[in-house]
Image 1 (cartoon, rainbow, N blue to C red):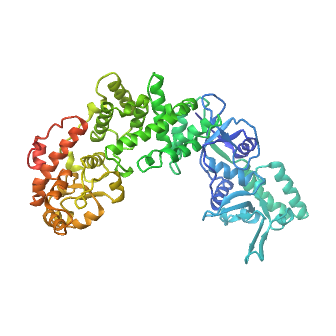
Image 2 (cartoon, rainbow, N blue to C red):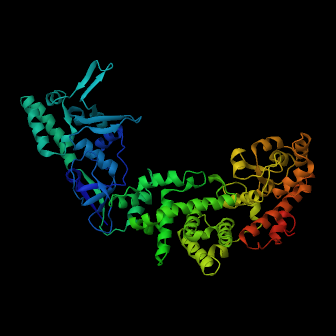
Image 3 (cartoon, rainbow, N blue to C red):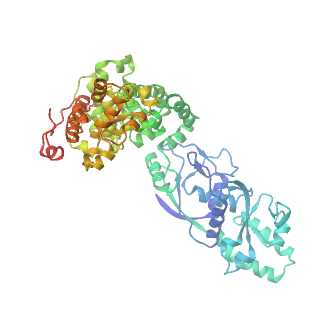
Length: 592
């Protein structure tokens, strides 16, 4: 990497020839009219406008599809440099100070407009005039009007009118021969008036020559820069805008082989990922899963880090993308069987990546539908959730899990690392206070999986009921009741005191004691005493504790039942249920 100060005149010539271009993943030019004027003011004042970053191009190490800057007419030119950072500034400079075409920009309200830029010679020489006030943006007609077009405020529609108004066209300022022609005609127009010559000489010194000599620091990355380094550069330099993703870089790489990855993903997304549960999967997630799958199938080192995704070949993508899409659909079915029905209730969206890869690998011969195999997948999944192991950087875990689970299934090998590492502290139940936690969401899914039924209708909360009856998470001992009775918030607001309840049933519950709302439900003839008791038990709620409003008993007994459900799901015994910490928090041991 090296840094050099380069004159903008040389940069604009290179851009115009196509020697400097944009990688095709760069977003379109978006600067508005006022910002362009401010940029011109900075340059003509010799103020710094920031560095640019280029990538030397011409090595098989990096093959991006490229395109010229907006307004450049050069065609079929292979660039020697690609702009990684500074696109907006360089495009603005090229469009306003070099190109002969009207600048395609927009107003501060986003309306698309075409503009030419001029600088008032007299104002530019006035030390008391703010430079930006000397710069004029005029319409494509080069005429500024008022009164709905009836009155002409400024007419620059031909060179003579430019001379009359002493307005220098800024798109000549970096073209020395053309600037000289304009200057000579300007002097002739005023019959070589000495005051005019004197004024323009000052303008030439303060504005034109200063701009011609203006330099921009350019950081150049060599041809051998790894693709992942280019990606990292974008993550660093695009913090103020929309972050560039790995997907966009791969899109540019595949475009070199005339493959439209973005179009392929949009079609794939509409076909496979339009449901609530899978809608959280991004294009980059899909590429990560595809890389994980392809490296596993090749039999060598399995990896799906950023550099591996950037090295995913189009051939491998085409080989695995369709099967992987079906793998995600199969993963969605498994999650629905585990009573994870919606995006907001998904413990970890990241765990979908290895789950989909495993479903794809096990699709051969429909092994994913074999009970013993599916049970192993379920156990691994719940260990990831309740061990809360998918919350950080996960690429290494993806690999360990796919390799480990497949070895466990196919070779009866060691239990996968995620199962080995999974641990759930019983006191964690009290710290699960909101649905932001994966373990919180996991517990709600286990309650649903226990065939829990609505308190009033008795309908099991399957996928259809969950969607149609606005099932949400509510307190069993209502909040207002708990606050009124000064009960421990750590307990009443924890997952131990919460359960899935329909919107209509929650309205019936209100804020009264469980004994009262249960009695109210019975007296309305909505459900009889014994049936309601059965419904409560499907929620892992102790009937006697609820009907007697025994909050402490309710918390302890439900905690025991929840821990039992977690043990069954993970296939692991939860230790420490009789620890001093547990007794301190719950008042007794959590052992039946």
